[in-house]
Each structure stands twice: as structure tokens, then as C-alpha cells.
Image 1: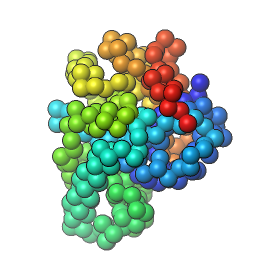
Image 2: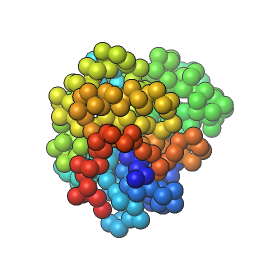
Image 3: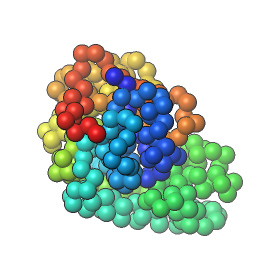
Length: 275
């Protein structure tokens, strides 16, 4: 199977509308797709009932574990669930609070209309750091988004601000209450290793988490092997996705990811809910 259970649309910080994202996935031969926008399921709600690929509604929630920001995917959620709507409202408020603080720091450094620019880039979505990065590029304060993060917006930079995201256990509880499977997203990017990463996976499983993203985009085979071993050790199901944001990311195999053959795929738990 060709599966992609991690991608983003214009409902958060992706470049393609949900319809265009689904069409591209079908064009690339995807058998199963989940749209997992940051802290919102609005992209899933915007889709028609009939789609050219099997589909799982999803979301990617920001949360905290031991003072680290992490992301948890919710797969097979009910986008209309009241608990999910409340969670989205909570996350949206945090994103706007952060945006105002980032804008104040950028304005102090001479960036023109930073909040207005980020909101324009977001086009109705809750503003994230990438929208500020796009504004910095548009007004000549950075050559590209990567430079904007390196100079100003990345973790530890002068315009990055902390966010009081909900605890990992809370994010998992929201997903489960909305009928979904909670999957720990791109654990290799958490900069955790060894016993600390194993403890994270154990805590995640203990809180009700269902799966681990073993493959995320283009990653070294050694990373896949390490995460596959962690998956086996914890008993978590395995997931995979591209973390696709825009077509210029040529190195990401959007719609065509897969897993080591011996792992238990997360989608086998959700087959009855495929559209």
C-alpha cells in the first residue's frame, strides 16, 4: 500500500487547498490519505463526502512533555466532535497569543506590519511561525523561509516565544474522545534519543497513545530502523507520512510512503472508517 498519514493544507501552513491535496495524492497513486493540519480539522471538514482516495480525517496537535514541544497526530477523528471543536478553539487562542508576541518582537527590529503580514499569509488560518517567515521573505528581511527561521523564528532565536501548549496526556485524551488514534509524530525530530526517547514512547503509550510515526518524509534508513525497533519494543502500531507542505518539497515522497513489512500498521485499526 501507498500511504500518507501526515500532510498539511491551506487550513494551516500548507500551500495546497484540501481539494488540491487530495487530487495530488490520487495522482501520485496514494491508497490511503490523512490530512493532519496543525491544531485544526478545518481542512477535513471542507472536503466532499466522496473522494478519489481512501481517507482518514486527521489533525496534528501541539503539546508539551517535560518542557519540550511535541506533536501528536489524531487519525480517524470525528471532525464534528464537540471535544475536538473545543480543543481547536483552545489551540487557536494560544496561536494568536503567540502571534501577537512574535509580532511585537519583529516590530521592534524594524519589520513592517508583522502581525498584519502574517495574518495575510495565513489567509484565515491561525497564524504560525511559517506565516511570519513568509512575511519576512515578502518584505525583504529574509532570503527564504529557512533563513527567516535561522535568524529570527527558530527555537532559541530572538523572535521565538514559548507557548503553554497542553500536556501530552491532554492532547491524547482529546484525540481519543474524538474517536481517533493518537500517533506520536516525527519522534526523530524531537532531538531525543536513547532512554529519554524510550521514556517518551512509554509515557505516550501509558496515556492512551496508539502509534508511532516510524517513517516521516525522507529520512536516513538508520533512523527508520531505530524507530521500528522502538515500535516493536513498546507495542505501538506504526504510522508513516510525508509531512508534506508544498510541491517545492521535492524530497518528500508525498502520497507514497510505506513501512517495514513486519510492523503492525496503524491503519489496520481504522479500516472500518475509511471513506
